[in-house]
Image (cartoon, rainbow, N blue to C red):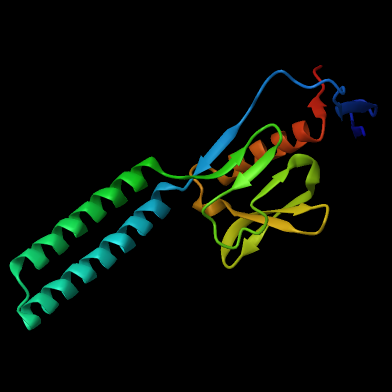
Length: 178
């Protein structure tokens, strides 16, 4: 399949062409993590929940005259939970991963199809789903994958450009130099 666009002097200029059937020896993959602001909101929610649990434990311990060891154990567990939340937030989980064969989406509720090969992708559309900017990958069998780009670290435009490049390589297209 070849796409052409008009050149400067009215002639068609070749822009893309199907790659030869031999595979590329260059592995290219991309990973996208949750954005910092999203992780901060998630961490704040977790800290608030832990605080409410500690407060409930203190009230329960005072009301029922529980031994101090129960309260101490609860506070130590809450402290450990805060440390674990901090470490997880700092690492940031990979949400979307592109490689030469396809894509994988993780940790996104309602994403639809979480993994597919590039050759299964029919088209890609950008839009708003539930008030969030999303990219929707429609597969040949009618199923879809939805990626909320506002939750990802980096610029949504860079994500879309990278997605287009992986799709083109996955479908066998390559840029013509010239």
